[in-house]
Image (cartoon, rainbow, N blue to C red; front, top):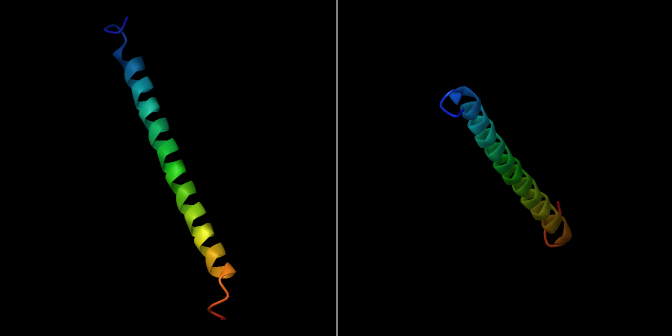
Amino acid sequence: MLARRPLGTLRRLILLRLTVWGVRLLAWSAGLALRRALRIAFRAALPRRPR
């Protein structure tokens, strides 16, 4: 079955790799946004620099 239909397994492998990269990119972007929000909140919490 694997030798008879290599296209389905290839498509499944590509889909799996795409989902893995999508989840990784989503986690990275979420971490970046969280880091940026934490930095903004920390700067707002510090009363050192008035605008």
